[in-house]
Amino acid sequence: MCNCQGDIEDKLKERFIEENPSAIDHRAVLMGYALMLGKTLATKGYMEFELTAKFRIKNKPELKEKKQKSNITFNYCPFCGEKYPAN
Image (cartoon, rainbow, N blue to C red):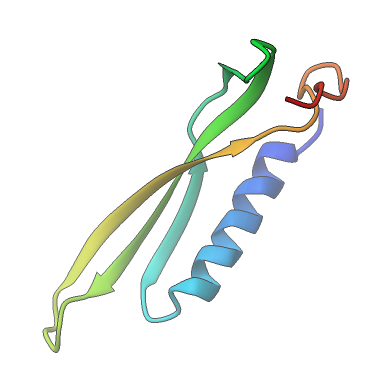
């Protein structure tokens, strides 16, 4: 089996670290897979992901964990590899 999920999570984590270098304990986790409807009512896959890191609170020693959720839209079906039609 492929390691696509792990590879994508690693790339998301790397970018998250680049964007938030002062935070610690960065994590990225893909949350699931769903289909969405486009303008032409064609379905297109997408997957949610979550970014988590601990940030220092203004000049205090405490760290506060923050989470951010977003999603990735696929251009190809993740199951059969067929390209989705343009919407």
